[in-house]
Length: 465
Image 1 (cartoon, helix red, strand yellow):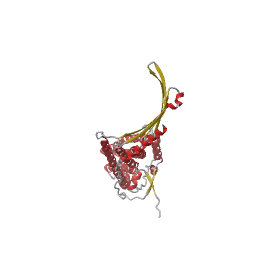
Image 2: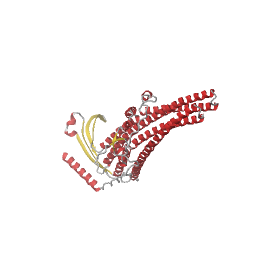
Image 3: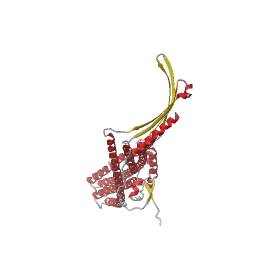
Image 4: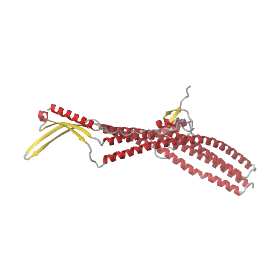
């Protein structure tokens, strides 16, 4: 009997191989060429650089460093992305399990009544099945799951970069708003002194009531800026707290230790455009998504072809426990099967066409992501270049406005100029200082955007002879 079973196994295996050889394998999916056209260099010349992860350390602000580290440890978007990686890994393992031999076991026992007679039946056995992957259906399914796992990992890194950038952005905006609030408070104090000076001159008959009312209006207009800036400051603090995975309004004590000076903007070497594709994790995720759709297309095409299966079982059946060990208790089976769709109303063809369209959509999304990434970097480079020039000009303007305000106040006190000239000088000083503070914040934010656009940070390499 054992010889007959072995003969049957050999016959079935040979038949399966012959059928597999008789059917032409599916044509491989057209391999996508993800080769976007890139410029040879950025519009701004920059030295070569090597990547580094903790790019936020370049702003030389200890509080920013600790805030970003805490956000990377506790941010809920990152926790969700980590769970997505774990899920993708489990799905990859699930897809891969279908390629291997499946073995199961079973056992049962009971009593059977036939008329007035009762009998007992006991059985235990092993079942095994395997699906030979002649045309790559299981392999393609596993490859798609593997690509999905890689895409999930790249998405996790992209989320990490986004969380770090958003935390740095919120902190820099908080610092910029704090500086604007300090400037407004200093201006309120200065304009209050000016109002007092005008009132003294009014009492002495050296000024008129119009000057006093103009001074009062100027003071109240500046004072009205304080509540709005305080609101923005608290809202920015709340945003920062949420990024750190904490409830709003819980960072006040910690932010009280923030340095008075705004963080410096580090020098940013941009490298060459080709390096962008290796740095940005969102582009790597998009590329892996294309690979997943490509493997899924291969699987859809393989579904048009025969699907083979081998299964067998060995069982012991008897009426008593002792009978399970007897020679007559053994029952064995070996089956070979083939499934081949013949008429399905065009369903398989429609699935292939739908997957081809999905692949083309993923390819278009990848190329669009590359163009957007290039645009992000170029915009940030321009903002850094022009922003630096703007800050330098505004620093000179603020210095000149401060000198003009001081001179105007002294000359007004001596009665050499009218109040309108002093009023204009004070308004110009407030405007110049506020604009300079905003420009410095914008310059720092442009640096953050460039870090994010290039996929992280880097350090300039020493030039070798």
